[in-house]
Image 1 (cartoon, one colour):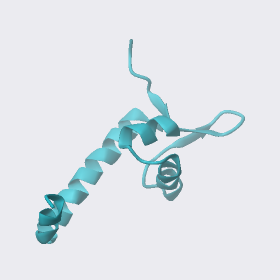
Image 2: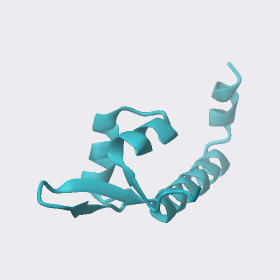
Image 3: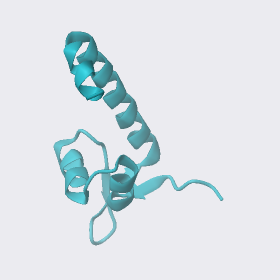
Image 4: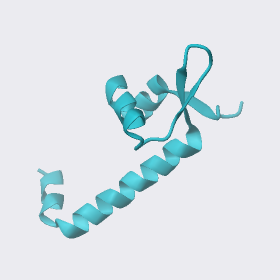
Length: 77
């Protein structure tokens, strides 16, 4: 079976281990690209867009840790 191209916001929330409202906020802010489809306007996130978002988060985290090395110490406490 192939992976679905589009994910529901609930699926995205589960993958990122965040709440549905946090996922919706990411979409509404434009931070996580999504489309609204169908007569009822259901939100969908393309799997590749989610992977791009995750990659951007990793890069932002690396940049933050380079700029704030003491923040890495907080991770092990």
